[in-house]
Amino acid sequence: MSDPVIAICMLGLFLFMVLLGFPIAFTLMAMGIAFGYYAYFDADRMWRGYERLMSKGEVDVLTQAQAWIDGLFNNRIFDLFVNQTYSVMDNEVLTAIPLFLFMGYIVERANIVNRLFTTLNIAAKNVPGSMGVAALITCALFATATGIVGAVVTLMGLLALPSMLKARYDRSFASGIICAGGTLGILIPPSIMLIVYAASSGVSIVRLYAGALLPGLTLAGLYLIYVVVRATLQPNVAPKPTKDEVPDLPALKVLWMILTSFMPLALLILAVLGSILGGLATPSEAASIGALGGLALAAAYRALTWQRLRESVYLTMRTTAMVCWLFVGSYTFSSVFSYLGGEHIVAEFVQSMDLSPLMFLLLAQLIIFLLGWPLEWSEIIIIFVPIFLPLLPIFGIDPLFFGILVALNLQTSFLTPPMAMSAYYLKGIAPPEVKLTEIFKGCMPFLAMVFVAMILMYTVPEIVYYLPELLYGS
Image 1 (cartoon, one colour):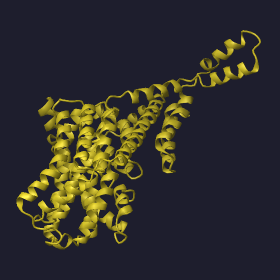
Image 2 (cartoon, one colour; image 1 turned 135 degrees about the vertical axis):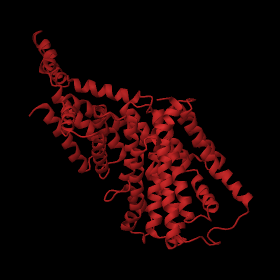
Image 3 (cartoon, one colour; image 1 turned 180 degrees about the vertical axis):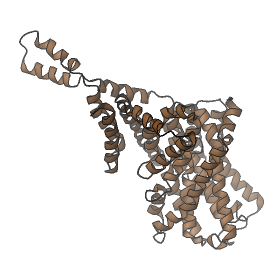
Image 4 (cartoon, helix red, strand yellow; image 1 turned 45 degrees about the vertical axis):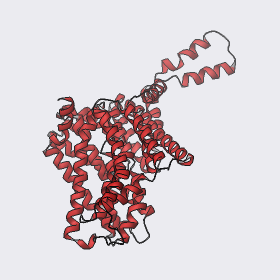
């Protein structure tokens, strides 16, 4: 077989191993090293030291064995693996990830979200579907602070879902709100996913954040419009709250609740995002501000305990390690894949299809949509998106615009059966009467809103480009 064919087999074998359930990061590293050993095999280099040793005369068996083992490992793939590991750990963009994660985990454990949902529920009580609106806004704000879909869906499922069910909300409707709202954090800045895409594509994270802000708010707005319109047309799916469920409070008390719950978290996120977009701080520096702000909020709410701090640090390190090892494995795998000619054969195949830019975008987004069924967003961004990146100049597509479309598309990976992870997160903590099929059914309208947002981005690209061009020029 030729090298390009071996590269395609390498990719196919990787997908097969992932579907069998092997850990993705270590599968990438193992396959990168195994196929790289073949790709970089150089018999002269391997046995040169051994032959030099033997030419000196009699050598004891132990020394011969050591020289033979050294020769066996004298392959450039091991140099590549070490260099890729170092380059990932030295990547300044990626240093923002643990700090943003730490901010999110601290906020999650500080009982801020409980206060926020209660306040918004009272403030929006006269809006159709008020509890759903409050849940969506809470999800969006909390998701923005954490960027961790599982944490948002789980916490909001424990907090908001029982309240909505008690208020006689339709089970599918309530479930869809929480599943959809919980995914917004991978799109709305400061998003961990956008940091990972920036590190993979070389696109400026600052421009990505600016480009993603309006699309993220647009999608959140579409969700809110759907909730309000459906609650207006079908009041039985979201009945108006009674005074027992949402008490009447003086306007000044409501304002005070907003100031003490909504505003602190909103100001923290605005400070982090504003310092990045305004050029006052790098993403890593802004993430440091966010981490300190999260600690300050937890302390202000008297929720900062040693146990919560230890849990936050542990979860931050675990998630950061997962992302970093994914990068190490992906860089090694993609380097070998490219060296064997895999990228070249993919590029030739796509060009032979004679696609228009629109058709290429549709094909790429369809593939990413399908990959979202078995894979997490991190694997898709780190492993598969780089395969498309070299093709973008051929079709005249801006990597920034492509990245925002991918971020929108990946919302669907959490909402689309049979592997809708948001639905499984919610089912794991939902009351027994809430069926998985009902959760899937509730996700479908929000899935349609994602597709509407993608169509809007393509037909009105100014939604993506307005802020980057306003702040940083063309």
